[in-house]
Length: 120
Ligand SMILES: [Ca+2]
Image (cartoon, rainbow, N blue to C red):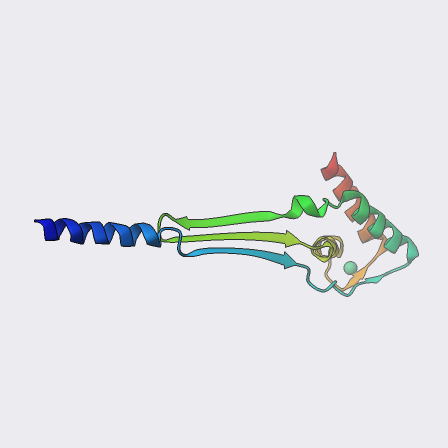
């Protein structure tokens, strides 16, 4: 009887000491290379960059946190921070509607109107 009690006590101590043993925290900074893009003319470039700077969310608000927890056994926390190039690349993708790698004045205008509509 006493032996059974000490056995179960031993197992309990083992389980408790394992608690939170596997904890994984990571911070990922995502800042891929800027996409190569051409502009039809200076006006197209100006409209694009002005819209981008006016409507880009500050990097602090582009952070995301992910937590995966299996109680007692496993914990995983992931913190992702998007760099400026993520915003630039998604703006280029959105702006270059026919995806030919060149932003025309018309595409820049449409992009500007869409972004500003969304901001209000
Ligand atoms: Ca285009």
